[in-house]
Amino acid sequence: VGAGAGFSPLYLSEPVTLTDAVNNPWIDKYVDAVDIDYPDNSVDVIIASHTIHHFYNPAKFFKESQRVLKANGVILISEINTSLMMRILLKVLRHEGYSYDVNVFDYDAVVNDPSDLWSANCAVPELLFSDVQKFEKFFPNFKVERNDLYECFIFPLSGGVISKTKVPKLPLAILKITDFIDKVLIKLLPSIFALGRRVVIRKTDLH
Figure (spheres, rainbow, N blue to C red):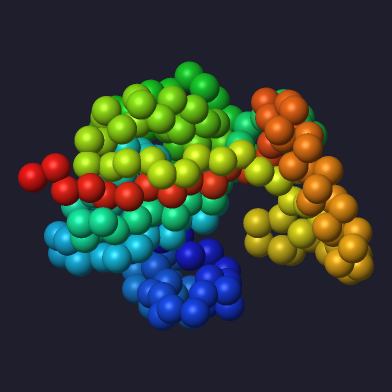
């Protein structure tokens, strides 16, 4: 969902259907993530890479995901994390905003502008996953199997989400050292340094 520039097939060995609410030439199927045009119990895996903080109602996305996923199916999520460092970057760059004054567990709430696909509330992933028990209680068919904070300096060195920012090609050794530093900083002070969050959610069959 929200396949954006369509990079996923470059990294996956299994076939993937690229869906988006924008009909770019590389998109396989138009899909509104809060009203997914797939039958019940028909999807193995949903990949949501830096998309959920753009949805006007994230709760509807997860409700639809519960419906279309097969039993034991998974959602793979890579998202932004509004650590102190990220909030500073967002304010300095004025790229996207964030607000904690929203209820992400409300099917009637509007957390982004429904008429603007690029409208963003970067606090949404933190609000959804900072309390896993609350998430699982609201979506009883879902089990959060992984909920990790990651990436600090390695994120800007990669060129960002859509890789449009030109960055120098660094030696692998330098990148490995940077990655190690990131892991140490995030382990010690995640609320300050963690720029990203990765989540794996599995659909369970309660019946």
